[in-house]
Length: 602
Image (cartoon, rainbow, N blue to C red; front, side, top):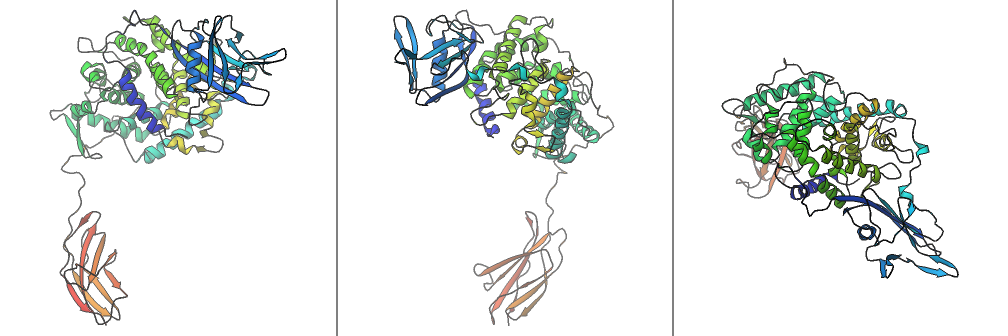
């Protein structure tokens, strides 16, 4: 399984530079063409057994492009780059060969690369056939292969499961198992309580709460800590001391971190999932911060609009109005307008995550009557990504990449998106589905969370397992046709207002205890050994004893550490004078060395 952490960091950096700044409504330049995505695959073998296989490859093109444009991009991304030939004639361009599968005839039989679109032989050549969004191009070598669609495009719907009832019991068990594992691992079974200094931890709390995980006292402690911290920021000092990271946290420090929108959004989602009002947490209005343009502009590009929308829509919070505040329409239109760039990033990185996450908060705005929202643009953006999801699912039902046959984090994000769009991943609806040859996303997820054997994949636990928890929860909610993961209208548990949290101060933060000077109470010589008795030093965890034939301890030094107040050092030289000193130790703190004493060993 690949190192998703490194990939995610790099991907985030790419998104920062590929997404446009600004909240003005983004319109395509009149000279810019609409973007489309087509899919290309090639397969075949020749008489000698040589085979070519190019798996399903998504290609983003300008509207009005021809099939040849897509074929070249797909082949250049494959193992056959620089090993294929397209020739030009008076009848147009044609694909002559890939590797050693080329055009030739034996008697009356011709072997060649046939060109099919959407399961039918194309009417025109590759340089003349215009392609449309969602087209599937199959290149089939004609030797012993008379198909008109590459195998990777095939889907045997007769294998579809009977519906969610097949998965319901196991899905809920898997959700509960993963939630418990995350709680035990991430929060040390409730001993570690995150606050706003750990917004990712709060987002994980949101994931647990929405999955119905029971941890009442822990949730109370989380809310009490967040409430105390936000309350402190509202005071005249405007800050609180974070004794975990040994620094003060304020609104200014949150802005300087460069991801304030994401931070406030995760806090708001956590608070809302715990049954509280994110617009008033001890007098602090998180929703106002999410609409504040100065906060938005100080935040990094990656995911800020989507996170803000998910937070403010989690309970249909009302936004402040005025020139200094964002509107829902601005956020929605910007999110929809960026979809093509996120699709481009997804295809370049061979990971659908960025495109998939981009549309997660948009479902309601396809029909919702929100003033200023371009509903047509929103629907088009959503359809583009949903089609990408449907088409890029492997014949085995999984979403693989260059590193593994199944990328669990991509599966998780697609389950989240399906759930937010009210799509049952265990059923075929409206002639579309997330099932291939009978395999569903539940089946894929169960490969990482095995409820039958009560195990969770270690690779999943190494990086953001809460993504899959949110995925399972969102999918289950959609399959059951219950309340969606968002909007949060009901909660499994409402945090208590009675829990208290005492904010630490820099003055009373934990410090190392000072240690007194050590003292040797008795030094006794024996045969080739000596024994040291040490006076007990308050707060000392151990004692460092040094023995040397040099009274300045510059050479021939033997050092021993003991937790006892008595130590015997052996294998010394007979008839030799040894000097001894002792030092009290507690962690990194040490006391002064004792007065040096000496004795002649027998």
